[in-house]
Amino acid sequence: MPARSAATDLLVAWSEGDESAFDKLVPLVYQELHALARHYMTGERSDHTLQATALVNEAYVRLIDVNRIRWQNRSHFLAIAAQTMRRILVEFARQRHRQKRGGDAVRVPIDDVDMPQEQTADLVALNDALSTLASFDPRMGQVVELRFFGGLTVQETAEVLKVSPETVMRDWKTAKVWLLRELSRS
Image 1 (cartoon, one colour):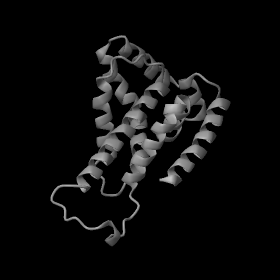
Image 2 (cartoon, one colour):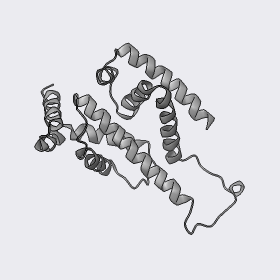
Image 3 (cartoon, helix red, strand yellow):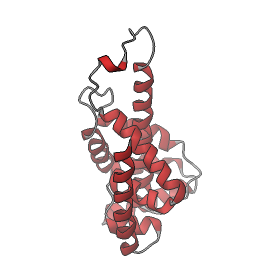
Image 4 (cartoon, one colour):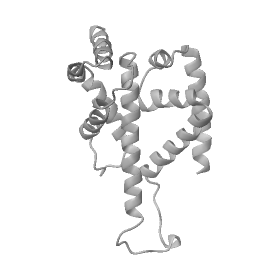
């Protein structure tokens, strides 16, 4: 618990302009960020160019420039870090998908190819479905991001969103059903 309190204090200091607070914060939350990145990477293909450490570093680079967020607590920071990591992986998946469609590649009719279901396409489809969900129910989209991508507990998610744990569970169950239906269509 002292590490959680220290992390929250450093986040608040960083929000208030103390640049050195971020450097002190990173060692406190690095293991959690790395565990989060490993969780993300387990769903990726084995030859993915990013490794968990590189994903944490890329997220670090993006988070260090975020100065307009008023950090609430450690859970809020981890939620934003999770969202950042998800966006990085989606960007890589989209880039890889674009590279596969062009260049000097020999064109083969689609009927002549057995196409395996790729995880990069799954990640892009999940991201698109989540964006659609968030467009008509932003809180439900946040619940999915925080729980699935961020690895936050129901209680931590409730704290970040300032709702009851029961509301989080209701949104979580509804969102899972909606996403499953949406993804099965594509």
